[in-house]
Length: 160
Ligand code: ADP
Image (cartoon, rainbow, N blue to C red; front, side, top):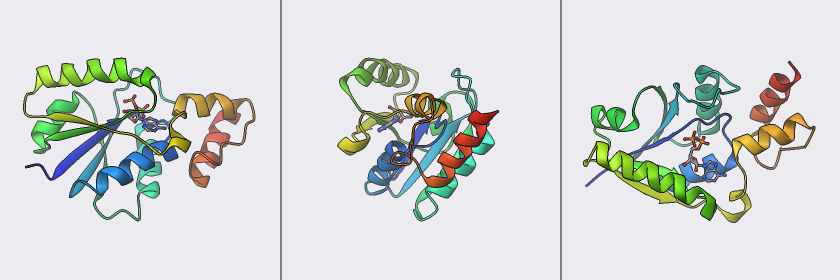
């Protein structure tokens, strides 16, 4: 039986969609490690330190959630920390193909780790960090989709 799960991602920046998944995972597992990828290929807008800080703030009221930066393979991190479950969020059918590939690749790399998918509330099922960054850049109000301080940081960063 597994009491520890890892929710890996770029979280650039964290949105209410991510937080929704973290809350759901924390109701199932004793500990949820939110793993912030420092070697993301996505050229993040925020440094790994900033992304970790924003997530720590956003999950401050969740006692069983730990936020950590990591680099390298998710399965290596999981093995090293005795984590048996990887959590990923599924929004639309469009997520499925990539997530399916990723889950099967991770299974091939490590048979000890199982991927579990969680669905967010419908109100967050169409948002992504990427979309919100683009909308904010064009002046949209994204306050319904991310914590206030994250929105503020995003606005400041996009001004540069
Ligand atoms: P990655 O670079 O690993 O795709 P993301 O931060 O974009 O990192 O996403 C991390 C995980 O969170 C992925 O499984 C993604 O599908 C999921 N996710 C992202 N946005 C949402 C959302 N709005 N609702 C539910 N899950 C989401």
